[in-house]
Length: 312
Ligand code: 13P
Ligand code: SF4
Image 1 (tube, rainbow, N blue to C red):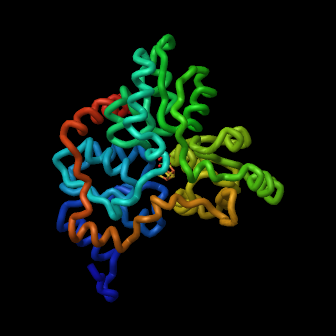
Image 2 (cartoon, helix red, strand yellow; image 1 turned 90 degrees about the vertical axis):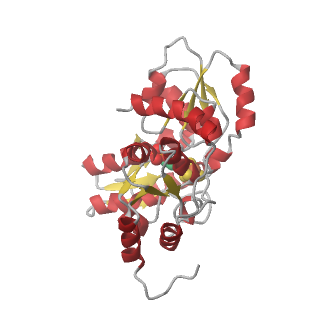
Image 3 (cartoon, rainbow, N blue to C red; image 1 turned 180 degrees about the horizontal axis):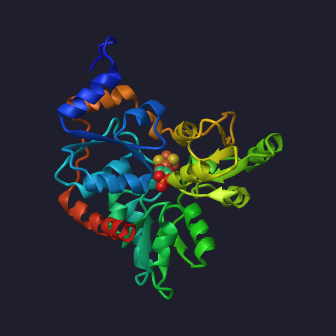
């Protein structure tokens, strides 16, 4: 579909949203202009919680596939649409359900905790879901003698092991964006900005996390910079979060942590597939839509609801 160059896209999106009783949920990694028209911006947990309580008829999810799938699992009778169906996630892709079910079989007594960044099929094979905001709390809710399989992010898994002292069997998956941060470049950046605080997402590798002054989910990082008396931050997560940081704290300085290539900042190529134009087209045509098998929804929902109940 060709978009008339004379229309005001933001205005049209707002009109369509009202006409169709649609809600736009956007992750912090979306482009600033998308965050600015969203009804709700948040991290993975907050977005799942919003999806659970929305009264809208249509949910437009501007994030990646597993997030929209989560919204559909929680709202099987609502229409969930996305700007681009190709917006996947390297971390979710690193854990194919068939391989994962083999690991499950190997440890029949283990409780399976899966990070929300996984497919619905992997959620269906899990006992409980977690996000980076509540992973420590979820792991600590499991009785001490109970073996745990944690999937798919080995970096978040190692971080939780360190925080809780709990041994866990880890799936060997990772996020290609967070693994790309270069510790060497961060050290060089710290030499240039000795007064800067390094804040990092727990999907980063262990060496970066060991060097960080604060570790947390995207919402935890945002809250940290808002309440901190520090004035300068090196931010080791996807750069989309800087939009809200700068909005809330215009007087503070945020430096994106550099990846191990020639780029100055680190963007998630999947999150960045979503554009303003695609949001407009998706709302207009009510597609592409997330379509899921009812049986799969029911199986995946159990683990998801356990997490949402524990996060109240
Ligand atoms: P949070 O939204 O839990 O901070 O996770 C970040 C992420 O990588 C989402 O894909
Ligand atoms: Fe997936 Fe990493 Fe992108 Fe998050 S940043 S959506 S974990 S690829």
